[in-house]
Length: 254
Image (cartoon, rainbow, N blue to C red):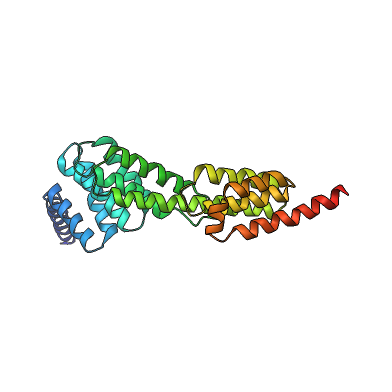
């Protein structure tokens, strides 16, 4: 009797496992894709990631697999896992160049790097990457409806890099490293001439030249950019620094 019960129990377990396996095999890729879309809409991003990974792995080379690759990136992006999203979007753009989602994936890569771009006083690796990707996007999709957003983002990111250079120049000034300050302000003038930091770069350059006892050069630079410095009420401060350093230089020569 005891043996009969054991055998019966084993048979029941075998049947249950077989049924579960059959049910699992009965789930189509389309069903799993639909599940992923439903989870994405419900903001169940981890479940959506699992669903789309399943379809990507088993649907390689199919339209459904290509679509799942894009939405896998979306599931990471919407879950604020931006660098993981970039990795999945990149797979789409590299392997599935004719996918209708390529343009949006390329823009989302730009956006991911923009979002990851930190405050100006931190390392700006992601800011540089975002700028590079936005420019590539504009070059490759000149008629995209997303170009206005791309241009606005480029402007904002360039302002951030300009601010970082300006603050670096000011730091050199505080450390009395006037040659380094001059180089920094000149880089700002050369590279970020179209940002709101340009007038401050002109002011900084005048003061760096003056503090470096290059009075004639400071006066010449001040005269060249007088109009902008007057407009932004920075002229008087720059002139004050020159006048102060004139006295120092005069005292040193006497």
